[in-house]
Length: 304
Ligand SMILES: [Zn+2]
Image (cartoon, rainbow, N blue to C red; front, side, top):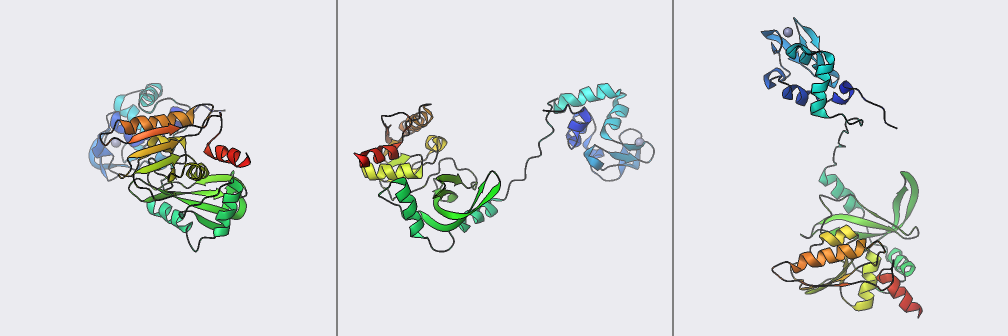
């Protein structure tokens, strides 16, 4: 349910912009003693935006919130002033969203690096591989015996987790994915900058590279086809993937999504790369059955 907010409620915190757009010159809004926008003088007025309501004080006019300042300046009634303000700030019901201050990249980078502190516990990695039915691994994976897990904001506990580093096209670690072993759950850390184009570089590659979405799917494709395969982590990751300059042949191991999201992303990537002057040969492989990925194919083959 939304409650209707008045113009003044919606205008809170936006007065500098409002006043400037409605004819109050910037020189009146410096926050220093100066002439009054209404009655002049030299030092009788000071704009403070107290309570974020456009407030200023004049020795002669006395205290004036932004709305009163505008009414006096333009000889508007309250309704007219509100209409003018609405034209600038809009009339959406929602209160102004204060952008959450973005954490500095250094802090995010530190949190990501912390996941790789100490020595990797290979038993954790092996447990995860076993649970996924995989017979190959990757040196870039890092096993943590105890990694904090939160679900819906609730702390669940410290649990065994495989950490996969996410590397940007330029080779910088921009995030990491936590693969919680027993919970069959994966979570990606907030990235430094953008995660677009980035991937988990599971194996060294030269001119031929495979690409799949998930880490487990990528390892399964590697096991099935013997092509070094990186994980783009999501359909968006596939779509925006940037191969390293050495790659001449890219094999996309797409998921067979019944809503075609995975396939569409794979073909988007193939189309984008095939339009490049350096000509990257691109093929898209999709498993036959709907709602399966290449790990499902591997598991089915192992059973047969
Ligand atoms: Zn005045």
